[in-house]
Image 1: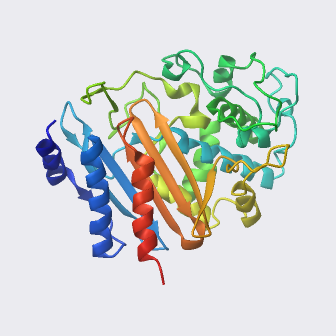
Image 2: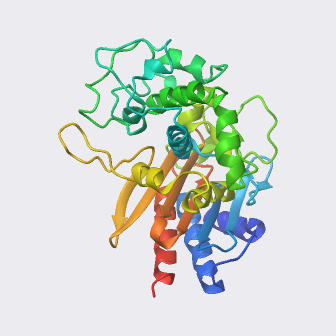
Length: 358
């Protein structure tokens, strides 16, 4: 598309769900998102923002389906990729609070079918990417095989050796979170998706988020795209995400992502001490802090904690930012692999941060 074509997209398909931020701030957020969309040629961007306790500001631009010219709306569901990981972390900590999961116990206490390794591994090390479980290799990222459940998907890596001694290194791995999801499932005594829905989504008021089942008819599901070498768009590669529900297998609206984060801030999901543990940077055996807690990336802006997680998957880029002390939450979902969703989210956060100064 020519730039004029992208400009037409904004005029035709901008939708605003709720307006809680001041009008001038809303206009600034819309400008940031639309300019980023034009620059990167993103087919669709969906944004939701929470500031304080008021209604969520949510809007969408562009097309959820380019081939059929279906406009994106705040109700469009996008793959969210690794934004899924914090759900697994919260589920594990809920079970810890209930006395049903010991984060320091060997994983075989909960998943006895998982082969023992050279060194013991536990759930805490899985949640902070220090257990030594490998990540994707070969063509696994583009897997189109359908798996019957969380336990079934462990067969991809279960017999492989650890890539390092647990606790000695940080090595990001979706497969490690998948194993943590299997622990959650066993400790809860019910399917992983059911546990997340009943204990996390329902208390949060989340209504649309669901597993990214490639066979189910999911209304308002957005299509995903990628760029060719010349910058033009094409459909993304096929992928069946049943191989990684705990680590990256959900679809959602931006609003539902924000509702989850707000419920976390409001104490609806975890006790304060559990949230503090989750948002404390974990340390290696050497004493070095990693900048990653239990399923959350962590950094500081102007001395305040920012918890975040991004998502990269076939046809999407996504990003979630949470500033607990300011009760600021930003979720950005896009249907383009090279969209720069993290940059968009941080620019939106900077705008909100500016407006929240005393």
